[in-house]
Amino acid sequence: MTRTRKPVGRIAFVGAGPGDPGLLTRRAHDALVGADQVVYDRGVPESLLDVVRAEASSDAQFTPAEGAPGDVAKILISAARSGQNAVHLVAGDPFGHDSVVKEVQAVARTAAHFEVVPGVGQAEGVATYAGVPLPGVRTAADVEDVSALDFDALAAAVQRGSLALAVDAGDLAAIRDGLLAAGVNGATDVGVTGDGTGETQYTTTSTVDSFVAAALGFTGRVVLTVGDGVGQRDKLSWWENRPLYGWKVLVPRTKEQAGAMSARLRAYGAIPCEVPTIAVEPPRTPAQMERAVKGLVDGRYAWVIFTSVNAVRAVWEKFAEHGLDARHFGGVKIACIGDATADAVRAFGIQPELIPSGEQSSEGLLAEFSPHDEVLDPVGRVLLPRADIATETLAAGLTERGWEVDDVTAYRTVRAAPPPAEIRDAIKSGGFDAVLFTSSSTVRNLVGIAGKPHTRTVVAVIGPKTAETATEFGLRVDVQPPHASVPDLVEALAGYAVELREKLAAMPAKQRRGSKVQGPTALRFR
Image (cartoon, rainbow, N blue to C red):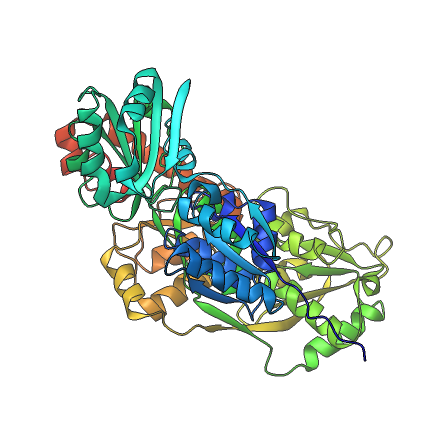
């Protein structure tokens, strides 16, 4: 009788780094995505856990680490023996924690397969995000037990270079007393950073004598930097000095479309809040789209003009229903109203023939669209798959140029459900520093489901039509990019923030306090 061997799982001790999900190593990411069970420490930020949960297997279990090192090791070993891949996810680097070292020792005494995946230490990583270099002789440590610190060694490190410690905020007073008792000059520069590498990271600078009072209100894990490097923050601080750092920005887009804009906003330091204002649904009667798809295959059209990503998606979904692919666009030219729409077309393996080089709008497309020539264009018909509420500007302009236009409803846009009450209240009370409108419908629908943004909220619009609609609804338009695209819209908002910061910095202190300008940029100067 042949016995079936039970599958053997693996154990990984994975360093999460200082907190920013983007600092996970590729090996750490692979271990987490392939895990059946993840035990995580309290020092791992919820934002990082959210990213990991989204990419991990739907069957993966996430539980907080509790108990002594031996208790955690037993959980990991039990999972491995049952054939599961288990991960202990820790803040910073695994070997930066004495408790994790003990767990690894316990696992090493068994036959379980294990690995240790290093991560950027909290102390060093957050110091870099805070703009505090640690040159020369330095000490950087993630501290669990303050009573075990050698303060004489720390004082020597401060004298010769710089010091960075990741500690609990409640231990700051004990560290101050230890440093002073070890002979550190009370006037030595100190930085304390909370929510290190997170969306709301904040650093306060003071001295050894005063840093406990300066850090009043900080909770959880903080990073303490001591020494010459703190004085270079003015020039080297980059994370907290990004143009939109700390700005809460409202993104009124469908969930499918908000991702790219939110990613760009985060790169500039903003905290995006996605609030869908429209939902996309199929047309009430599919007959028009059925005829349009048949016409594409039969060579009825010379051009297909896409005016939105939703239109591209609608046509490809209809293609998929009939078992068609990009090859069935052979001989048909494609025009796109803008770069985002063109990218959606390229994603299906097709290169558009025409994208406006100037204004990315109906008018911009018409300005570059050639009139119909009976000799050069034996097929004189254009397919225009659009939303049910699209304007007639483009269809009318094509007709004037001699083209026959099949203006087809490819999808319907309907107003989304209202956002939660707290979001509605924030919109109307000025809880958002900025709002980005990418179409007239996003303006109309946001006002319809949530009310008008407060007058202190910066209003940014993608183009002139959207600006007109915003003005009609009584909104003040602050930002409009010269080029109508999502990247340019975010870039324009970032530029506006920089100008605002420079303007406020140039004001006398009394004028800053009396300024009507709101938002994080203004608050930093008050």
